[in-house]
Image (cartoon, rainbow, N blue to C red; front, top):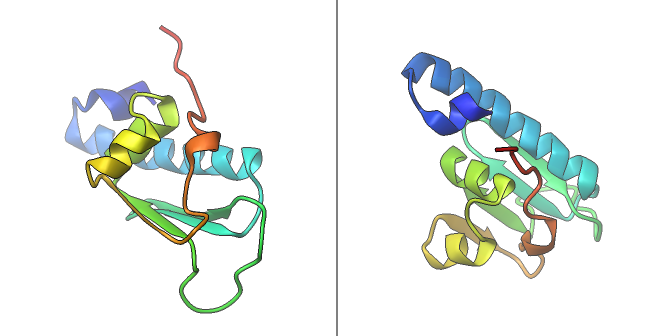
Length: 110
């Protein structure tokens, strides 16, 4: 995960970023299981999480989308949800599209 956050070697960084994004998305689904909110981090992954009404067809009513750098920052506590939302780093639609209570997912040791 440190390699993904450091950004030194582009090829290694892409592979590390993909792994880190997928790992943190999996942790989100482990900690907040459900199918109410779809969290997308293109091109690396998308998951459905958070308990509530299940979505089965078409575009989900609650969608959160962001780039990998934003997801890594949110998931590790480097950026607050409110800041990412206010700066436009996160696109969130739907009444339940809020990850505030689920972040950070992972804290890196110093």
